[in-house]
Image 1: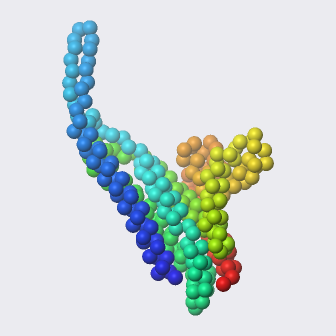
Image 2 (image 1 turned 90 degrees about the horizontal axis):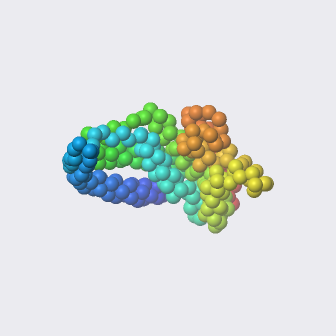
Image 3 (image 1 turned 90 degrees about the vertical axis):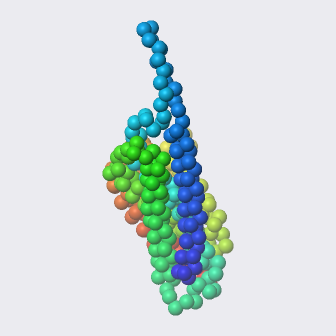
Length: 265
């Protein structure tokens, strides 16, 4: 069934890539059109009054944080991870055919996850390159990307968080034949709500439960980027968070494969 998974992944990848390219073209057209717009700047003082006209291209360099590119990579990877997550459940719907092949379910599961992971990494690379090219085309020689070193760590954290998101949804939907998609939706909702409600002590036991979810919630680990670790579930640098999410993702993938292997034909 690896070929079927490859075909599904290729279709999803091309669809999301097409959306990204369309957005990039619109951004480039808008930026190039705006670069020729004229801006009138007037200077009125008691001694003199003058005005001059300039274009956007003459305003100097545009410092663009590289973390913006990393954010685009993270969003693209999360979107693709969400689309690929129920792959075990899709195979379960054809279990009488999938599970009679002369291959162990564990090996079959590893091949599916490997294909999906390669697609996630490829999407991250594609989105990063496309964002960089879009910036260069839109701003030309005026573009000045800053903070590249830190953005690479953020991108590694984001890719790991997307893979952890994928692994959790995969584990939630792997075993209940016919109801896997519903379980995956419930898991996604809980993961989204946990960072919002996990620190609300007024909710009592509910906040405690959401606080426990934060330990494995990929969105909670991403708060290290937006809040500089102030409300993060794990003390340490971005590198520490990146290692944590990748280890958690591997653990949830193993759990998903184990649950999938218990599905009865």
